[in-house]
Structures are given as C-alpha cells and as structure tokens.
Image (cartoon, helix red, strand yellow):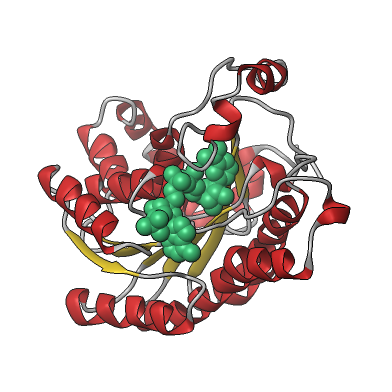
Length: 294
Ligand SMILES: NC(=O)c1ccc[n+]([C@@H]2O[C@H](COP(=O)([O-])OP(=O)(O)OC[C@H]3O[C@@H](n4cnc5c(N)ncnc54)[C@H](OP(=O)(O)O)[C@@H]3O)[C@@H](O)[C@H]2O)c1
C-alpha cells in the first residue's frame, strides 16, 4: 500500500493528486497529443547554443560538431592546422551549419585562451564544450615508456581537458548553465596492452567527469563523458586497418563491425541536449557492445 502511486504522491501534495485524478481522462491524449511530439523536438534542439568542440576538423570531433550544428547550435571548430580548419568550416557551411573556425593546439595555453576568446568575440558566449583532443605517441610495453611520453599524453589528454573546462566554466555560468562532454575511450575501461599510457589517460577522464559533475552542478553545468570503441577514423587506422587485430577485436563485439564517427557524434549531442537534463557525472560507452567495467 505504501508504494501505491497515489499514496506516494499524496504524501507530498494531496491537492495535486486529487486534481490529477479528476483530470485522469486527459492522460488518454498523451500518446497522440501533437504537443508531446513538439516538446521532445524542442528538448533535442540546441538552437541559440554556442558549442566549442576541440580537435574537430575530422573524425569524432567533426561528427560531434555536425551533430550539434544540425540541432541548431553555432559550432566553433578547431585543430592545429589552418588548412584542416578551413576544410571543416567549408564542409559544415555546405551543410547549412553555423560555424566559426580557428586553430588551436589544446596542449598550448595561449591557443586555449585564443579559442575561448574567439568564441566569445564571434558568438557572444559559450554553452557547450566537447573536449575531444587526444594524442598517442607511444605503442609498446608500458615499461618502455619514457617520462617524455607520459608528459605529452597526460598534458594533452587530461590536463588540457581540465584547463579548457576551467576557462569556459565562468562563461557558461554567466549564461545560467551549460554542458561539458569529455571523449574518453573503451581503453579507459579495458586497457589495450600496447597503449598503456594512453589507456591510463582515458581512465583519468572517467575520474575527471565524476569529480567535476557535483562541483559544477551548483552552476547548472552538467559534465558527462563518452567512451568510444573502435571508430573508423585516421587515429585508429592501425587497428581497423589490420585484419588480424580486427578479427580478435570483433570477437568481443556484439555488433560485429567498426563504429562510424556519426554514431558517437549523436550521443554527444544527446548529452548536451535537454533530453539528458537529469544525466551528469556519467560515461556512455559507444562500443558496439563491449562489456565495459573498471
Ligand atoms: N577512433 C577511435 O577508434 C577512438 C576510440 C576511442 C576514443 N577515441 C578518441 O576520440 C578522440 C578523437 O579521435 P579521432 O579518432 O576522431 O581522431 P582523428 O579522426 O584522427 O582526428 C583527430 C583530430 O584531432 C586534431 N588534433 C590532433 N592533435 C591535436 C591537438 N593537440 N590539439 C588540437 N587538435 C588536435 C586533428 O587535426 P590537426 O591535425 O589539424 O590538429 C584532427 O582534427 C580522441 O580523444 C581519441 O582518443 C577514438
């Protein structure tokens, strides 16, 4: 009895429950009411939002920019090379996406500051950050990795992700809230043996997500993460381009194929939308069904 819906709700607001019961016939219309459909469309819309996506001139970053842009956000794309930025801007413009482009090597403080300032100057604020950049300069036994390798990987993949978040948070706060999404990896859960330091850096992002979420919730900023499996991009071509590795890898997959960048981009856009308004501190794995746990 205690758990019947009416008793549960009455404990909070008996008057409200009565009025709900009186209007019970209204419930019949919920399934067909066109307003319900409109509401869910507006919840997925990002119209009026400004989104920075780092490392976004190809691969998962570009797909995230496309997914955010198609939902109405003004996207700010960047990467290290101007030629790549120009190409990405032209592509997004051809898809009628509002876009600004600039160079930014996320490992450099002055570049991160320039990215944020350019966004503020050209778009007037910041609502969304997708921290997507990562490097992996090392393949091999972890015991052979050097201090230089660790400095590079942790600096770009983890420290820069935090420092750019720190830069954008005051501007999100000014707008009344926002969304941060980190791009981790299945390797963060299931370390890939030849990618030890990279795997550790991706595990660190799962922790960063969980540390930031409660602190930034006070500013109405949600912090989430995606952990892709093997996705067909240049970054992972050594994996999906090698038949032996892929045969072994596919044995762990439920969906027996490599993922496409768009399949990650859509999840990122969902996390940034109002449809995900009660999700924070979470990592969504996008792996074709690999069992992921720490
Ligand atoms: N592909 C996968 O299977 C896979 C799986 C799990 C996780 N991920 C993660 O997904 C993210 C994106 O990877 P991806 O596969 O989409 O890579 P990608 O297709 O190779 O694209 C990499 C992008 O990053 C830019 N970039 C590289 N270093 C940068 C830096 N220091 N600062 C700013 N931009 C930089 C590149 O442009 P420039 O050369 O012009 O800088 C390019 O736009 C990474 O965090 C990666 O760890 C990928």
